[in-house]
Length: 329
Image (cartoon, rainbow, N blue to C red; front, side, top):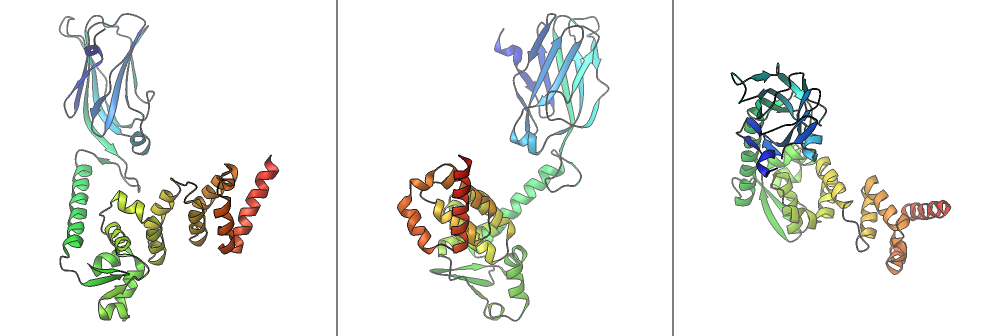
């Protein structure tokens, strides 16, 4: 069978699968096709009944934001008299996650060439924060474009120093910023600028415990100008700033990221950071890496030096973990 037999032709809202022949006791699945944000599949099965399935490809996007679909689906027999067409009554606002969510069974067994025709009337997704589902073809795209434009504008304001009204003094340099933006993102900054504190009077904020590069990364995050390499290079400094300026979203982002690339070179530093900043997931991950996977024996000298300066409470936790692991053998 040719590759063409599995291809689905599409427009932005219409999908058509042309099947030349479909014999009895046959199952066929199309190639993936893109409609909206998702890849989709059509499948047909001919046995005692004719079954048609429509479902999105399994992916992280489908799991996190499954499509809520409204569509009209038809089975057309072009070679039959009067171009016989079966039309499903219609699907409205149905959430589709897997191949069992939409199955159309019909007793009419059409023969010869078939066309499976799907016209998507709407595709919606539910906002991650909750609320009513929104169409990806109207409000979703407008909102996405608007958000992108705003973030680009904020990034440009910071990069070009447009109408800055506060100076951030890092350990080795200064950066102009905007009180309103900082106050919106951090309750600590908001308090500084709302009361008659030194920062309000002098229009400066001293962050002497951050390097210029780390401070730039901190401000880029605040202004929505996320840069992956910059973030990865300054995660610990960003974590400290997140704690200091009460930015829970940044703290959680650093927490999650620091758990993802633990190795023998950084595990002791990360363990100390986890203890100081009360990061339970990172602490558990470091303990497990050191004890359960036996990496503590590969860095004996570094570990002994670490114990000389570590907090007693943390040392006690480590040895409890070691004792627990020994009991497990």
